Every structure is written in C-alpha cells, then in structure tokens.
Amino acid sequence: EAGVAQSPRYKIIEKRQSVAFWCNPISGHATLYWYQQILGQGPKLLIQFQNNGVVDDSQLPKDRFSAERLKGVDSTLKIQPAKLEDSAVYLCASSLVAGAKETQYFGPGTRLLVL
Amino acid sequence: GNSVTQMEGPVTLSEEAFLTINCTYTATGYPSLFWYVQYPGEGLQLLLKATKADDKGSNKGFEATYRKETTSFHLEKGSVQVSDSAVYFCALRTNQAGTALIFGKGTTLSVSS
Image (cartoon, rainbow over all chains, first blue to last red; front, side, top):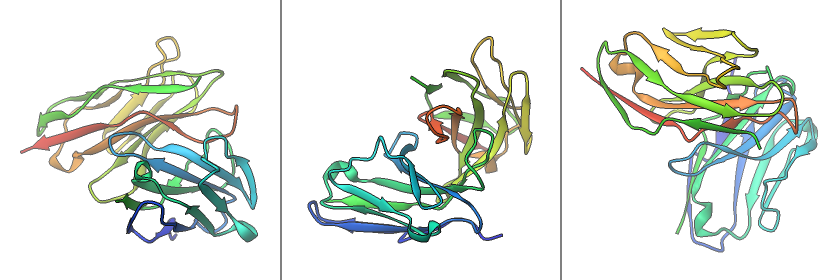
C-alpha cells in the first residue's frame, strides 16, 4: 500500500514570499491532517479535514495560512506571506476514519526554511 | 487542556542497555495513547498504541502500559540496539474536540556500540 505522499521535500524562500505544499493521502482515507513541527518540538495540528470539509482549524493562523482539500482527496497548504517563524517541517497525515483509536499515517514532511 | 509531557533528552545508552522514556499526560475523558518514532531523515512512524486503561502496547521489543492511576505511558525496551537511535514522541488523542494527535516534545535516543 502506498503511503502518504508530500511535495516538495524541501523549500527555501524569503520572508514575505508565498509557498504551497501538496499532500496525497493513502487511498481511501477520509481524514487528513496538517501538522507543523518546529525544531525541537512535537508536531502541532494546523487543520483537520473530513473528506472535503474542515473539522478543526482552530490553530491555523488564518491571516496567512490557508488549506483546501478539493474533491476530498489531495490537499494543499499555503502560506502567504511567510514569516521567519514559519520555518518548520510541515507534516501531512491521514487516517481511514476519524476516531481516537484510529492510526494516523504520516508523510515524510516538507522542510521549510524562511530567510 | 490536554497535554503530554516527556522526559528531556538526549538519552545516551550503550547497546544492550535497558531503556525507559517517561511520558505523562493530562486529558479530559479517556484518551488513546501512542508512541511514534522518527528515524533520521524519515517521517513519523507509529511504534505502538494503547486505547484503554491497563492495555499494553508492544512492537519491535518496545512496550508501554496505559496507567490511568498515574496518567502515564512510559516506553521501555529491555535491550536497545544501535538501530533504535531515533526521536521518540509520546502522543494522545481524545474523542473530544476532534481527533488530532497531541504530541510531547520528543526524546532523542542515541545508542552506541
């Protein structure tokens, strides 16, 4: 079974520029998550989708971050404009259904450096 | 609010030593508990999980027991190998306020031969 795919793997941008990350979850997984992992910390949820609807975006900085999951499959996370503190690894994860006992499968992440 | 606290790292051990990484949690309700591992250059992988009190999760020689009375989920392995060198994350999920994982800060384990 193919895992969660993410691209690009690395990105370096100047502050105030925009950037987009792409995620393709495991086939058939209804729930998709974006996490931000700052160096030395554990991942923190940015947004959760159930199919193409948003379940939780309470920790998404909506003035600069946006995400969509059109057609309930692939998802894109965008940052515009980027700040220095956005330097982090952005992780995408998916699970078959939403539920506390369900295993989340993580992609390799996109490492973003904002200069 | 819900949170996870892990012991500070790095943890440095010799091959075949006994490993314990402490993890305690604060949560409303009855969370499910997880250990994820991140090998150098790779993504997060589920190591083991426990979904109710007194459950023991185990995988690859690692074990952790869900202790509700002490709100703990400590990770143990009887004999570590160099290949176990990685960052280990304790995490929880509840059925309240969505199902996203809440992670600890991670503990780096370095095993030398």
